[in-house]
Image (cartoon, rainbow, N blue to C red; front, side):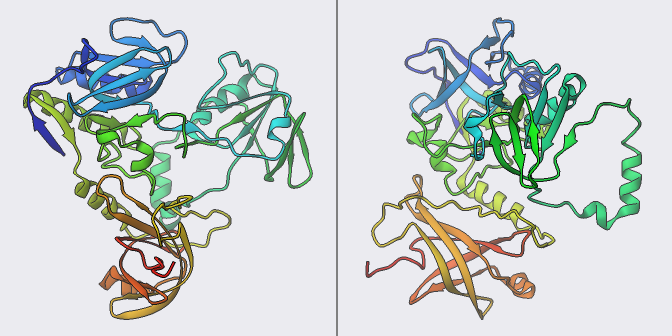
Length: 434
């Protein structure tokens, strides 16, 4: 991280600039608030939209709709839905505003006549008592409510998504796993358990859900626990960093952060996304303390540090296995690159030369023009397996499509035996004759 010394300044349009603005008054928000108080940071404001919260000098009701960084004052202006603006030198997103609830487009979704909402945006008027509830998905938001609903609802049926990854360490070490579990799991009082649907969803009907095995599941309420996404297009950017960079632009190739906390291009802004929230909170408190001790106005992770951290994290060896249904392609393809002679996506044959050996492979590649460094970045997947011994010797090579070649680096091996690759500059699928 780099920090810029100087005298702290308030935004030109705000006379009341706080040291820290925390978004979210949940467990993460309260924990980081306590850590900041322990570090001597007392000028803290917490924003949260949950109903019934008591307003005081530090806790303010309000749904955050966006935040923008001022390069002239090194401060953030956080906007709420009621039109208010809260200014802060540092923002901690304990409830990140860049995500929106994601709801799959199930057939007949709009035909269902009962109650329906996403667990990430719950209906405060919902009462589960005596109702037949269908839970679609098992994200962390809905998982907190399933047991409570099961106690009072007439029935709770969970339609779980297939796993994307399988943890095999416990299976490989059953004696150690058994001792570990016995030391941490004890008996609990019996509770009504939800029913797990045995078949995938075919469609939603006016009165319930029909699964692929032909069974009709009549329900009174459908609750989506299907996670979150970053919208590709919004009415206005929700998070705007230095020089007008939006979080959508920064994360277009894929979400990437340093330690899961900081993102290059968004100084003085910290995320608490987990999984080790306690360590992230300590890191944020140390950064804020550093700013105050050095009378600095700005702290930002270096782009090189962020890239090296993520590359090292992804280079860890994994155990390949054959997936049943899930398929991930970490690099997204834009609808149009906007650059002459470079198509928006390439899906076809190529030759990968690495470690002095040439391999005929099938690749799927896409790219974009980086708004920060002005360079063209391309990435994608080698769908054919590569020899493990070759990758132990070198990960930098040359990728050739037709008569065009470009330097490439193998980033990681996915759990399914494919490999993620990336390059900088003109991609090998650029067509000079177009």
